[in-house]
Each structure stands twice: as structure tokens, then as C-alpha cells.
Image (cartoon, rainbow, N blue to C red):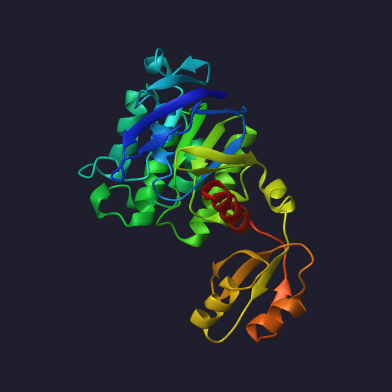
Length: 305
């Protein structure tokens, strides 16, 4: 459904390097299957939004090509835009139109009606329908996101590109949105989504960790957690600053970082809880299973070595 071949689009960075997509030799290549929920995870500036714009034919790559739903994004952009839906990371609807007017506008330009595809948006739109006469600019952040997603879906696209769609949405609505995405995927809709939330990333069929315009790896969330190659421990303590310093001097440490109220430390093989506890002077140490955050940080560190 999506095939990217040696994509590259880069811009000068303040430090004299290059940023964008496909910054390494050979560019960026990957495949996304029909009906797959494909997550793109990475820090701000990793190139996620630039990649989405290339795949939606909104930006032309310097080199390489992408085929989306059978259309070349460089050559067949008019046909492509009829079969994709794109929700950017910033609110981009018409602030002076009401909720209903925005939805009607997007339905009209795609040659359809709200009624024809209401079943696609019902789960989300029903939550803002009571405010259908309210101007879009007067909506809360979460309601704006729900309206934007409804407008993205109203023409029944084959492929969805969603750039952090749950930003500003309450936890219950986040659950509703992901339930809807799974329903769409079961109907054969291909979904490419970026998210800053690792619990959401776990709901994707596959995820790509992106950093500095490149994919560090592409795999299922389960495989990324299961294949973590080193022992990892959760460590707690009363003095966080002191604890951080002690962990950084542990001779068998590979990396350590704050994780909420505790720290995670990755070590060489053969390290025990007792050995770490003796080094830091605390018994708040336990071995744990690695999560996606741990996998991403280890890959990021390996790339920068």
C-alpha cells in the first residue's frame, strides 16, 4: 500500500549539518501493508512531519520516490489526494466556520456528503455533534482534534496519515480514537500515525523508531520489547540527583535515565540487584522487562556512539 524507495529531503541545520528525511546515504526505504497501523515514533525534529508531507505529495523529495495506494507521490498527486486523508500536527481547519460547516465543506470538495460516510466518523463526531453550530476557533484543543479527524475521514480514504492525532485529547477520547482506528484497519484502511505516547505505540501493528531523518529500526512493539539485548533494572531512591550520579558511575552500566519517579539502568550481563544496591546504597532495585522507551533510548545511544 505504501512503498518508499531511497527517499531524501534535507535542509541545512544551524550546526552546519543536514536535517529532514533520509539524511544518511541511500535515503529512507520502507513498506507499509494494506490495513496495517504503522507507527512512526521519534523526538521533535526527527523528520516525522516532513515524511508525512512527502507521502501526502505536499513536499517533493530531493531524490527517491514513494508509491501510496498505487500512485506516485511526485507524478500522480491529483489522483492520490482523492484517496488519502491527512491530519497535520497543527489545527488547520477554518476557524470562522462552525463544526458542521467545516465537515460539510470537506465532504463537498471530495464529492460526498456527511450522511454517506457518517458511519466512519460516528464514534468521534458524536462527541462534538452537540456543538455543531459553534465556531471552530472556539473549540477546546481536544474538540478541535476530533473535528479535524472527522474532516480527514469524511471522504472514506484508503490511507490515513495522522500526525500526533491525540495531542490535547482526554484519556477517554484517546481510547475511543484508537478503537476507531482499529475498526478502520480491519476494513482495510492503511494508517500511518505518529504519537509521543508509548502506550499508543504499542497498539500499532509495527512501529518505526525515527531519529535524525532515518529509521533506527522497524518491528512489532512486542518484538522490540522482547528482543532487548541486555539486563535492565528499575531503581528508586530518596535523593534523585545523588542517585543519578551514582548510577552514572556504576562500572557495568550501559545507560541510565529517569523514568517517572524512578530510574532505569541497563547493564552488562551477569549483574544482580544486590550488586547495584551495594553501589547506590539502597535496596530499591528490581529487574524488569524492557519497554518501548528502553528500546528506543538504547537504539538512539547506539546510533550516536
